[in-house]
Each structure stands twice: as C-alpha cells, then as structure tokens.
Length: 180
Image (cartoon, rainbow, N blue to C red):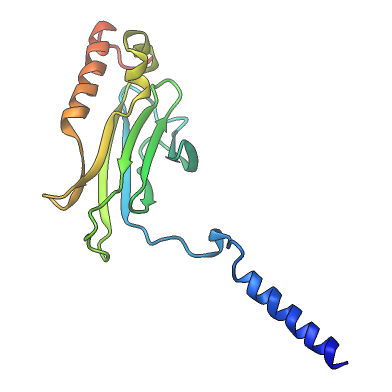
C-alpha cells in the first residue's frame, strides 16, 4: 500500500514537472502594451462616399487585422515595438496603397511613451494603372520609421516624393482625370 501511494505521488510530481517544460500557448498571456498608435485617412478625390474603404494591417505577409470604414472616417491601429508592419488601403475604383511601418527602436527608448503617427494619403483612380509600372502600384507609397533626432515616427520624404511624382506623371498622361 505504501508502495502504491509513493508511486502515485511520484507520478503526480513527474506530470507537474514535465508540464512546466511543455511549450506554453502565448495567446494566454496579455499582448504587449501598445507602443505606436497609427491613424490615417485616405482622400478619395472625385468619389462619392458610398461603399467605404477597407484597411488591412499586415505582419509577415499575413493580415492580422482589418477594418471597413466610410470615406470620411479615420482608421487606427495600435502597434508593438520592434516589428515591421504594412497597412494596405483599398477601395473599389481606386488603386490600393501600401504604407510600410517599422517600429524598431534604439535599446534605450522611453518605456512609458506611446508614440503617435497620423497621416493622410491621396488615393488615385484605377484608370491610372495603365500609365504606371507594376512596382509603382505594388511598392509602399511611404516608409515610416523612428527618427532619433526628433524622437518621433516620421516618413521618408525623399522616398514618398519620388512615388508621388510617378503618380502625378500618370495623372497628367491620363489627361488629369481623377476617378471614373
């Protein structure tokens, strides 16, 4: 009888010990605190506000969140630090836009700060696609990252200006027509 009790106690201890080495489901733990609040609003020239638009948050080429909003509404996403995200904005009749957001920070960042980045992005009609290279449509229109000197998140103006120039050239080639 003593032997059965000792074996039973040993078996329970072994299960508890092995259980502590088993992989743990990370979804049981709370998510990391929001680090960067990104909010944006697309501008649809020449478009009525029916139908709305869709925004998708992408991480490692997978959609991890999405929202559908009316044209006059702003979207928001809370992002974690040290991650590269993409935000894709889509609306029927318009070319999709992609924004790349890199939340990497130097080692000695301020834990208690919630950074914010707000933007507007002009959306171009689908009819411009014929005047653009595939890269113009598929690549991000903005690359957002941390600016150490200013202690804030900002976009690369030089990169974005080049992209916007290509879209404006396509608009001129199309005769200035905005949306159909």
